Image (cartoon, rainbow, N blue to C red; front, side, top):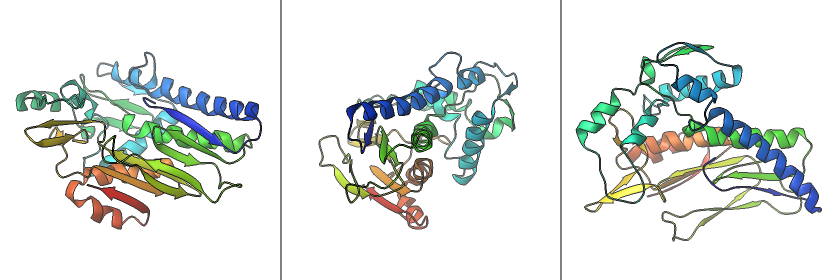
Length: 275
């Protein structure tokens, strides 16, 4: 998941908590192994190494590709799972290196979901293009881990993968789950949110950004330009029924830039936006 992961559960025995943690970890590793672009032999690696040939995928992969295609349409091409190649020229490590426009234009030649032939269950991309499911994978993993715990009859649990989280049920021995959300910067005070049921997802640039000549560049990139989204909020947190839904709304809001708050107002969810 590329981040610290934890499970909070209402258990009396340490052994029970350990078993539940193992269940959640198994599901997280399954999804990591299957969908990480860094894992050789993964579903994503097979697609990216197809060299222009058509690939037939399984139902779970097809469901994620369908979801990504929907986000592409809803975002007016701002959310694009083929845009991960921009990582080759942008390094959001707090430094000052800004890529040249010529390099951005070169990379953008390999971006564009509209150029992908996706006819479930078969996908074919032009040679040189890649997909990256990182924009939806962690939230999906949270929901899957929570589902696995519910199926096993677990007591109320809170699944937290890098700040994206979901509950299996409302807590029994406390009023709500108390969640801390990191501030606009790593050293800023965290926000406290009381969550009884459902899920939370946060998008932001507290740790991933560049700053040069007084201008801060967020890691939220617009694939249509290859540049960071202008006027994007520093942080958006959304509460929804599932982590996947919350992540979808927070990400789409970020991609709206200056229009983020207006977009969030129209979604009928609880949200917190900080600039």
